[in-house]
Each structure stands twice: as structure tokens, then as C-alpha cells.
Image 1 (cartoon, rainbow, N blue to C red):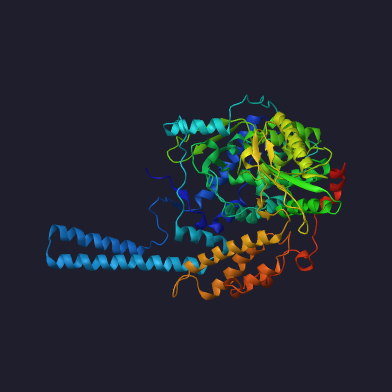
Image 2: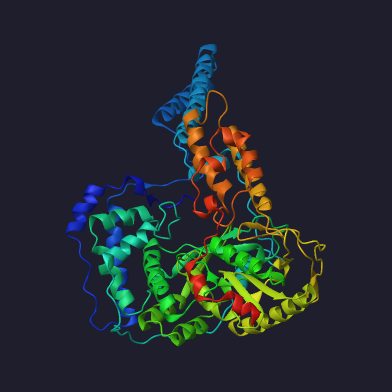
Length: 618
């Protein structure tokens, strides 16, 4: 079965599009719209716009046998080869057979030359992003795990099982019968659209309309007023149309799983239309601006907000641990992970939090409309591809989903004496301090029980198998390392000699050597891949090897330098290795933060709003 043709957006005639957009105007919005009339208005206006864009782009029909290296010359040689082959079958003379062999040899040599030239051209313009694509081409891609679920004997039953797991059916909220334009609404501007588009990658997978971000960026440059005129009425009435909530859900396997006989071994990434994601980014920006004003986010919550990265969370954790060693206090931390947090969010609970914090009513209504009446079509090999209603959770793949989840779990930051909780989206670190490790174990058990009780009413559960625990100590401590385990729900969790949290390798003494030794190993693996793609006489040119090493190896080596200074032993090891000869040593790059030079940590500003020591000592 042939795939339907899709527009070739790389060949879009922007000059013709610009002339067409000069006379294009959106239809006037209904003065007192209902959900149906506003949805109909948006569908008609967006269809007119997408039809205009599609009409100025040539169509293409890619298939699994399509080759980027193919050319008209190869097609001509292929026709010539098959012509001589047909003649030889009708008249098997020595002359005809000689022509067949000659044309076949020429055809196969041309294919080999085209492969080599295309590969060299691809590598000659390699970037750190396309480098990993080149690695997948050269080494192959691991086979994708197929859902082998017990009790599901055909794709339809597999899809039903996955839908029951990820999107359990619940009673939908009552529909909105009328819409109102909110007085506190600020009109959407072209500058907000520009900021939303600047944060969008052109390589992101488009939605069911197949329009990438690059097309919308070109449209916005040609006519900046077009997007606000199309999206402003939706946001002003707190409404998200059903056509933007109907999207396919790609079922992807989680790498490294021992088996794929459980739905928890997969995740569903929803591919919304890029036009919907632009509006979602605008709402996420406005909602994050109100987060500080309305106290939507706890001061120790990181992720989904500017200035609250993984490095900030790691810095806060390190600061809390080191500040208690001189007292002297014993400090322990329990690392927890929320189980399927995005899929189990309940919109009524989220909306009640937003209303209680006095968020702008139009944003509250838009979030409720965004989470209501969604439909999803699971896509995997052999799937029936039927749309099913979704009434729970937030979609993974949406720009606003992480922020909504952070707001949703704010209540899990408990105010309990001698307890401090740091979180990054769905990763939590529970830190306690007391005069003894045995008391810490007891406090961690109580904290886990309190968290579980607090999470149950909002349909959040903790993933017990991913739990880890560590007892911190100073490097000069003469006491032997504590090995007291923590028992949670009849399961013992033993102390880790080192563990990974948010990409950082932590040891009980917070020694950066463990972390940067791992980064050095990963950089060597990347360098080995560069060598594999650069055999003598072909592949990456020498000047590109140096440029790629600087742009590729530096981020790998320096990840974590915003928290720790790379130790001299690792820096010397890099300088004396092939990484240093290519300019990949940490000393060859400017530090990402000033404290890499001074050795003094730079703490996030929002930490000043929360007295962490007072919270632990209470």
C-alpha cells in the first residue's frame, strides 16, 4: 500500500507564499461564540491557511526503499541495464550477454560511487546533532521492542491494553456550553509568537498536518500579524479546539528493559500539530510568569522554569549536605521517582490548584479545555490506528506538560521538621539530618509514608524499584561508611557507593572524580566513533575533526562543571590523551560558569527565598 503524498516543505516557494499572504486574511471571529462556533471558525481559518501553504509546495511520496543518494543518472543506468537484460533473455547471444555484464558493472559501480559521495558530503557538513545520526547510520539502530503483552494476541488487543494502561477511562467533565471573553486577558502579540518559535526546533517531528516549525517561522517572518489573528480568539476565550487535540501517539520502547511484556516498558509520545504547540508555548510562558507571583511553584522545585536546571537542583542538594557536616550532623538522602506521573494527572485537581492560587481565569479555562476531550491514536507496527478518547493525564510531547506536572506535584513538598525535599519534575530527593544515621533511617521511613499519603489523593504513586538511598559523610571522616539499609514496603534498599541523579554521579563524600571519570569515558567513546567515521582518505576531513571534537567532546566532558570543578587528575588525563591533542581537554575551553575558575559555587537566586537550614533544623 502506497503512502499518501506529503508536501516537500524544503522546496516551498516562499516568494509565491509571500504574494499569497499579502491578500490572505482570517475570517472574523463570531462576536459571542459557543464552543462549536469557535471551533468551526478556527478549523475553517486554519484549513484555508494550510491549503495555501500546501498549494505552493511540491508533493512527494517517500517509501521505505527511497534513497537520498539516488540521482537521474542512476535511473538512466538502471533502465539501460534492464533493457540489455531483456534483450539477452530474448536472444541469448554472446554479444548481448557482454552488453548485460558491461551495463551491470557500470550500474553497480555508479551506485557504489554515489554511496561514497553522499556519505562524504553528509560527513563534510556534520554538526554535533547530525553526528549522532551518522553514528546510527554507520552502526545501525538497535531493534525496537515490540509490545509482547500477555493476553493480547493481535494488534487490536495490544492497542486496547496499552490504552487501558496509559489512558484509563474516566468520566469526562461536563462540557462548556458557552464562552466568555475574559476582561483580564492580555492580547497576544507577534513578539510572543517570535519567542515561542525561537524555542522550537526545525527538526521536531510534525503532527498529523506534516507542517514543520520551519514553515511557520517563514510565515511569521513574512506576515507577523497572521498567527496572533488566528490564535488570539482561542486564548481570549480560554478555549482549545478539538482539531488541535486529535493527534497520533507514537509507542516507543524504553531502552535497556530486560523484556517488553509490560506496558510500563513503553512510553507514548503524542505528536500534536505544530500550530497547537506554538499556542502551548505561549501559554507555558505566561503561566511560568505567574508562577512566581501566585506561588505556584515551591522554591525547591526545579525544571520547566527559567533558571531552574538540573545543575541548580544538584547545587542545592550539595549545599544542604555540606552545610550540616560542621555541626556535626549525619545527613542521608532518599531518591524517589514518580511512577507514570504524566499519565495519571487528574485535570480537576490541577484546575483546583490553579484557582486556589488565583491564576488568571482565562489561563485556568484554557488549561481545562486543553486537557478535556482529547483523542489519541496509538501508532506501532500493525496497530489498528483507531482514535480513542483520553480523559486523564497530560500528553507527553507537549511543551506545557512538564510545567503543568510541576504545578500539580507542588503539594508533595511537605513542611515537616528535619525534612527537605528537592525535586526536578518527577525526580525527588528527600534529605534528612540528625545526630545519627539510625535516626535518619527512621526519619526517611516516616517521610516516605507521609509522601505516599499526600500523593494518594491526587492519584500519584511512587516507583519503588527505582528508589535509591545514600548516607553522606566527609572525606576526612575516620568513621567507617554507614551501611544501614532502608526498608520501604517490605523491600530493603541498600546503601549505594555512588549513584546517578539528574545526570550527576554522586558519591558519599561528594567527590567529583566519580562524575568526571564517567564523563571522560563517554568522551573517549565519542572520539572512537569519530575515528570510525574518519578512515584514511575518506570520511570526516581533518579540519572538521578538530571542530567537531571541540563542539562535541567539550559538552560531554564539561557536563557537571556548573556544579563541580573538574579535578586536576582528570584534566591531566585528558591533556595527555588523544582528547587533549584534539583540543578536547577541559583546560582548552572557557568554563560555563565563573566558579569553575574560582572554585566557589554559584547558588541559584531563588534559593535565597527559602531558608533550607532552618527547614532542616526545625
